[in-house]
Length: 127
Ligand code: AMP
Image (tube, rainbow, N blue to C red; front, top):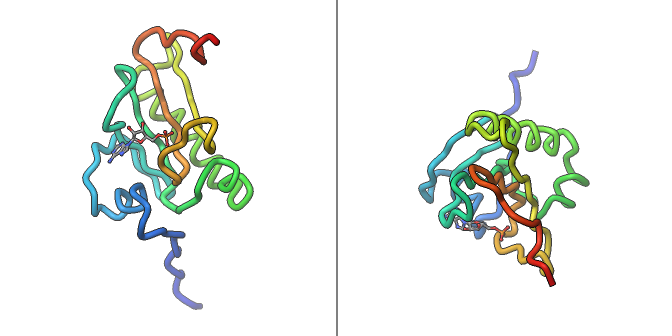
């Protein structure tokens, strides 16, 4: 029987979040699985602001959903686990994927923002 093959991760060496996964850039990690990593946002917009990412590089949630449905499910499960661990299930929280230019996406490695710990106000600034 052949030995188990190591899982080859998709990596973009110029990607900030790939470098966090690789341990090259420090982050405050709050949750980790084989396929996901969750760490505190460096510039929090709420008392709890955690980013949940797949360890593999996908530019945004559309690319992840297309290339890796199982990885998408892992990401949602990790986000739910983070929300529970951070005590957000009682009062609720927001799960947000900025995707592309109109949404103001800054880091092109898909990440779910888990936001909570206080009332979060309207989803968008009223026009
Ligand atoms: P987005 O605008 O959805 O692409 O969000 C990118 C998020 O990454 C922002 O909320 C930033 O504050 C956050 N961020 C940028 N660099 C780091 C870092 N080194 N560690 C943790 N969060 C970061």
